[in-house]
Structures are given as C-alpha cells and as structure tokens.
Amino acid sequence: FLDVASFLADSMTKLFDARAHWGKVCPSSASDLRRLYPHLNEFLGIRRRFDPDHRFGHAWTDEVFEASP
Image 1 (spheres, one colour):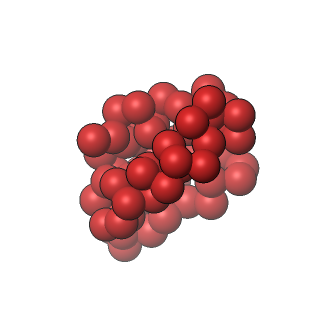
Image 2: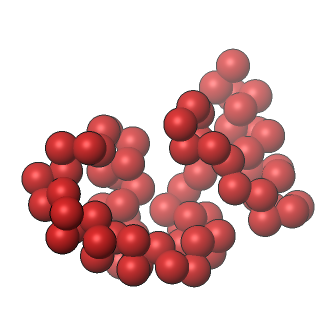
C-alpha cells in the first residue's frame, strides 16, 4: 500500500502540483512541501509560537518540518 501511495503522491505532485491529504498517508518530501505551500515558513512560525514543545506533532510532521527552513 505504501509503495502505491508514494508513487501516486509523487506522480500527482509532479504532474499537477497536487497536495496529498496530511491526515492519512502523505509521503511528500520537505522540498515538495516547500514548493507546494508558499506560506509554509509562516505556518512554521505560528506552530513554534503556539506549540513550542510539538505536542500536536508526530514523527512524520516533526521530520518534514525540521527539514524545512
């Protein structure tokens, strides 16, 4: 399942700038997310302000957000 989901997400992102739903399986890379979400840095600042201990994050969001500027 994860192989197919990764293939579809990668293909749809490259072909259509599609953004996968983060609540299920979202294999997008940090570089894809930076390109697809032009206000990502603004969001990361808000996240740091209101959730400095990352209590509302999990392993995937922490990995992707840490890789973002």
